[in-house]
Length: 274
Ligand code: GLN
Image 1 (cartoon, rainbow, N blue to C red):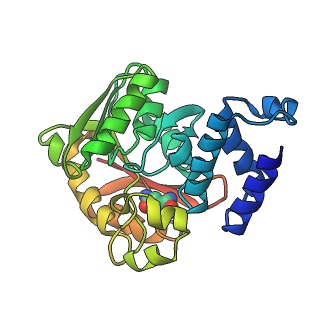
Image 2 (image 1 turned 180 degrees about the vertical axis):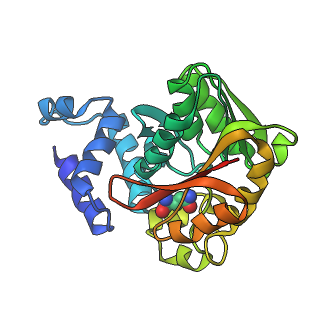
């Protein structure tokens, strides 16, 4: 299939890392074939319509738009999530936040995800905890629409509210609050790979001068939104756990812990109010 060789070469030239694999995925999306089908039909020329579809996708990818925005999906916790440029693409690193949350949730837990984005965390929790009441907040109405779509797709209910951090949940208490807030120091944004820097929502990435702005806001504020022995768990960036743990201690949390992601990086910090 000439188009596969051409696509691979073109993407590689534009700096796309796994050009061969990504070329295959784009061709699969354009033709409706799976990868086996692609090889079985290797000698079969594409139709004009398929070619036009592939070209459109390849042009977007060559500009370094993330593959997930082009295909419209990303897998997370074994579930397929719809994504759009209004939301951060779910990262496998974030699965440890869900797993640590699951360890601490009880039947009937009231759970809140601050900065719900695509809804991947909230939906994955709701899916595994059918008795829980899961809520999510986000400043972005567009993100909330994606989260709602994902809740429907996976047959769960997530109470979604628009607003800044805990503001939409005034007077409410939860047994478990989770958040993957923006945590990249502003000055580091320019050095990120183009897929992230130029396409993912800045508001989901920029954590202020040292990357810790949202932890300073969320951790003390969460105290008044947790039940008696409720847990707050946050995802952190590389090297931030040592700076985030003291924020939990200062806000009066106990049983403060750190959990690593599969790459061995401290990825989640959590604690309990007493
Ligand atoms: N993990 C994301 C990245 O490094 C950042 C997500 C965030 O700021 N919460 O691209």
